[in-house]
Image (cartoon, rainbow, N blue to C red; front, side, top):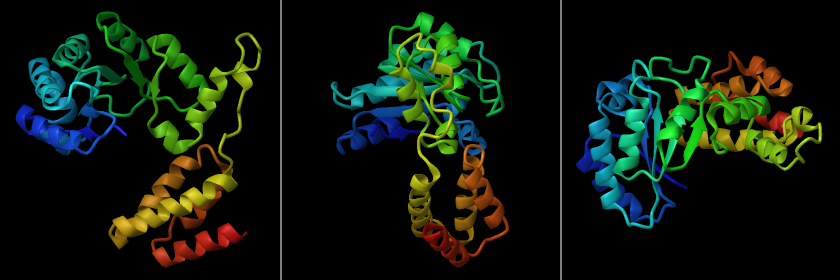
Length: 263
């Protein structure tokens, strides 16, 4: 696991990174892509992409605070309002000590609206010497193929696509193993890799986590939020979402999960 830190003060981030490193993670990641208003309003996340010099100071401070063998990586968007400084920001992160960079191929202003500008990741790759990972708007195998072709990145980071289809990474990996020119690439694994009967116990596990960690008033909404994503890939999730859409009583949801598991 590579935990992610969020903030804008180099000294505070360095102190937190040092504490985090003492817990033995596989690495430390820094977030310069969060588009949330409350984060940006306090100078964090994507707001930092207006200040490449500060990006450099943050990376340098964190890199100095953790053991030399521990990877320090970063994630960024293409910019805050536009992508004019994308390459400058990426270079600042590399020169500050980032060993890997994930690029979400949209600006903060773009939010999560399609499309993702994967070709701009190729521009960033062209000026860097560190590995670059492509992120943004990868929902299926075809998206993964196009993203790789336009960005030049083999490595991908999956976000909402994995929430919608928890087997997406497995599907991409399986497709990668197909012989080139076999003729099966475009048609491979059209059905979800993780079938609904296999996924349903994981939905129940997720519900138990929600029950123990969230206020009672927010519990039903969080489960319905996931079902709303899943219904784009699973017909069964569509039925579950419609059945629970107006339900807010956790006890009714518990009963529904038990009856679904038995049925």
